Amino acid sequence: MFKRSDQDSRQSVHIFVDGAAIEAREGDTVSAALLVSGRDVRRATAVSGAPRLPYCMMGVCFDCLVTIDGIGNRQGCLVPVAEGMQIEIQKGKREIGR
Amino acid sequence: MSKDYDAAIVGGGLLGSAIAWGLGRLGKKVVVLDEGDIAKRASRANFALIWVQSKGLGMPAYTGWTVRATESWIKLAAELKDQSGLDVALQQNGGFHLTLGEDEFARRGQLVTRMHNQVGAIDYRMEMLSASDVKKMLPMIGPEVSGGSFCPLDGHVNSLRTFRAFHTGLKLFGVDYFPERPVSAIVRTGGEFRLATAQGEIRAAKVVLAAGNANQTLAPMVGLSAPMGPTRGQIVVTERTMPFLPHPLTTIRQTDEGTVMIGDSKEEQLDDRTLNHSVSAVMADRAQRTFPHLARLNVIRTWAGIRVMPKDGFPIYDQSESEPGAFVACCHSGVTLASNHAFEIARMVAAGALDSELVGAFSARRFDANHAATSSGYY
Image 1 (cartoon, rainbow over the protein chains, first blue to last red):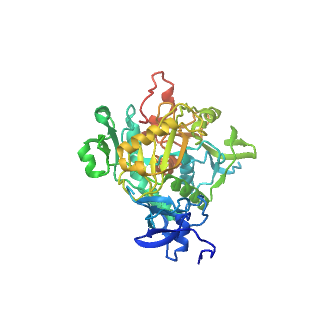
Image 2 (cartoon, rainbow over the protein chains, first blue to last red; image 1 turned 90 degrees about the horizontal axis):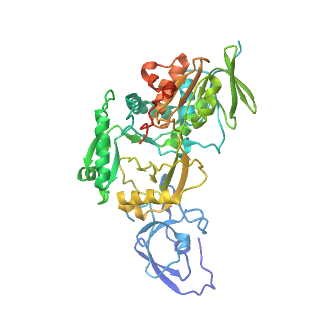
Image 3 (spheres, each protein chain N blue to C red; image 1 turned 60 degrees about the vertical axis):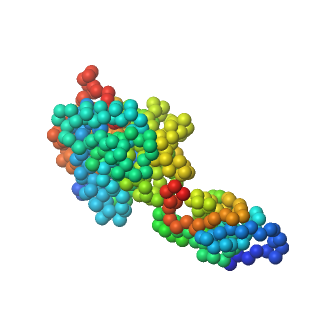
C-alpha cells in the first residue's frame, strides 16, 4: 500500500514488531514505520474490538495506539523510531502495569 | 376542564427523567421541561455508585429507602434494557471504602460501630476488613492500605448510559421532552398548574419539581420548601485499561468500558467551569497509594460538578398542602435512588399522595424545627 520514495536516502533503523525484525528509517514515526512495513498492523479498539490503523498521523485521533518498549497506549504517530525498539500491536485495552 | 398534561416534570436530569419515565410507564401524559446543555447537571458529572454503606446516620429511614432502591435496581436495569436495548452495566457485588494508615482505619471502624448501634436502621452488613482480608478480594492494593469497610449491597452502574436509556424510554412512552425551557413561574388556577416559560405556557394537572438545587427557588412558588446546600466535587478519569478492580470503592471505580474514575472531593465553591488542580493531585495521589499500578496510567479527563444536596444531606419528597398536586423531589443520590424514583415516587405522584410509611421522614417540614440535623446523609 505505502511505498518509500526513491529519493529517501535516510539511514536504516531496525525495530521489532511483535518480535519480527523490521527495517525503518531514521526520523520515521512508529506509525509511519508500521504502515510501510507491509505487515498487518491493525490494532483492536478497547471497547468494541474494531480493527484500526493509524489515521491522522498528527496526534489527534488516537487510532495509532500501540505498545512501545513495554508501555501500552502510546501514540505511535508521535514517537520516532529508535534502534532495537520493541513494538507490540495492541489488541484491546492497555494491560495492567504496562 | 382542559389540561394539556397529567403531569409536568420541571427538570430533566436523572431524577426528573426517572420520575417522568415511571409516570410514562403507568400510561400518564407527561411533559419534561428541562434546561439546556450548559445546565449545572449532576446527571453528567456523577461518580455512578449505587451505594448503601455509611448512608443514613442521623436518619434511619434513609437507610431503608436506600436499601430498597438497591434491591429494585435489578428490575430497573432489566426494564430499561428490554425497552431501549441499552445495557446499563449494573454491578452489585459489594463495595469498599479503603483506608490508608492506621488512623483512617480506626476512624472508619468507629463510623461502622455508630451505624450498627443506630436504633431503627436496618442492618446492611457493613463490616470492617483487615488489609489481608481486603487483599484476598482486591489483590492489587498497595502496602499503605490499612484495610477498610465492605458492604455486600454496594455496587455501581454506567450512569451516563442509564440517563440515555431513560431519555430513550421517555420518547418510547410518548413523553414530551422540551430542552431549553426553564420555568420562571408556576401558578395554580382552576385545579390545574400553569407553568410559565419563555416559549409559552404549559398546563398540567400535577407538577413535580425535580430541578436539583434550583428546587430551592421553585418550591416556594407552590407552597413548598427545599433548602439546599450544594457542594462541588471533582473527578479524574484515566485511559482504558484491562479489568483489575472487581468491586467499586467510594473513591475509585473501573467502568464497564475500562476507564478508571477517581473521585469524591468536596468543596464549598460552586463554579463548575474551573478545576482546582491541587484537589485533583491529592485524589490522584491517594488513588495510586491505594493501587500503585495506577501510577502508570495516563489521565485523559478531569471535571468538576455541582452536587445536588439538600441542606442536611437527606432527600426531600413533599406534596404541597396549600397547592395539592404540586410535588418536590430532590436528593444527592440520584443514581442510587433512580429505581425508587421510577417505581415508587412515580406511583405515588400518579396516585396523588405520597406514601408516608415510605417517604414521610423526608418531608421538608423537618427543617422547620430548629434542631434540624446537619450531618450525614452523605459521607
